[in-house]
Image (cartoon, rainbow, N blue to C red; front, side):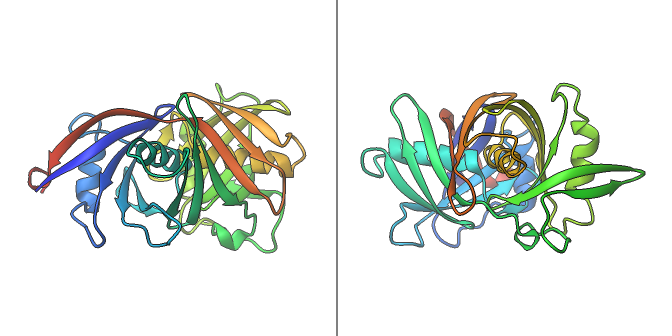
Length: 280
């Protein structure tokens, strides 16, 4: 079976986008892992599968699969790439369109020049939203990590995030603490891990170790999570520039009860096709 795809990226956080009818399921976890391999496959951080909309306001429903083949709840940069792709196909009006996802509806605005803004919805600090084994809800949590401890903020942006403040992202122990926190027993569904360096109240530097993908060049929900935690700790202003390894994102969050907005570039790299039988 031959399947068409579009390869996209947002600041180097890269995706393969497939169009699919409802119930389409040729991409098993094994096949996705083979496609994600950067030496023998296409290579991607996440695969995005577009399906017909399930909500009358939406132009499409999308599903997200990490490079390890596991389906997850949300992806901010992926949502921005999908919005850019569908707008290029003529969807929406004046660059505005609504997407549907496992985490709910996503309002998107595609701007001239290639930037895309998405409304990632409300921020949730309730431990059950991640989930995180903790009671009651707290501003900070301490994790025991084989003889050392780490202080984190925990938040859901439709998917789970743990955020640490570090003196420098250049020297942050991402490769060591990233997987240790991702698989920590207090996160039964694992967690994305952000390492945030605060430059000033309107600017942070960020590295993210993504659940099921490892460290990526940028992470949209990770940027939102870092700003939300920084705002809760009264370290950041409502609008923050987020410098990732792949470039810069902008996050705007007025505070509790308000939606969080993510803005940045999204680009089409190339289009191609694969033969599913060759992946069996």
